[in-house]
Length: 128
Image 1 (cartoon, helix red, strand yellow):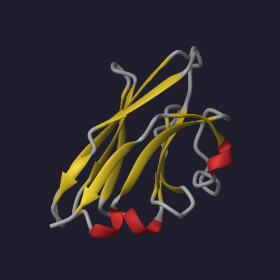
Image 2 (tube, helix red, strand yellow):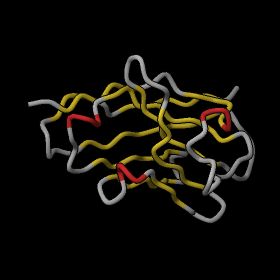
Image 3 (cartoon, helix red, strand yellow):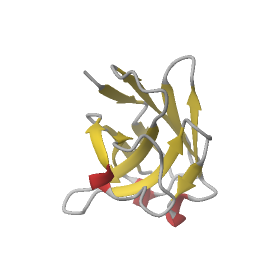
Image 4 (cartoon, helix red, strand yellow):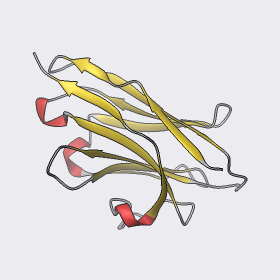
């Protein structure tokens, strides 16, 4: 059974940094696409980044470009989201998810219906 577990959330001041982790288990495919999403109450889940194992392609939504970096550690089956220069508007529950097509799409990576497995989420709060 596929499982995704996020960790690394917390409270940070504006301008600070956090690194989120997404540890995956339970699938036997050679490739994957792992996306990061975030959601605040009353709003739709927003896709912010994605990384493909096959070619290390990475994608970001405009609001996080230059501040967030997605990466992976194949030895640990873990995907990271390094978040720098955090802003209050980055406050949300952050989720990682597995792309059902096993790779990230440059034009569709932000669509939640492209992902079929989700972690439980980790809260990130940016506040002074």
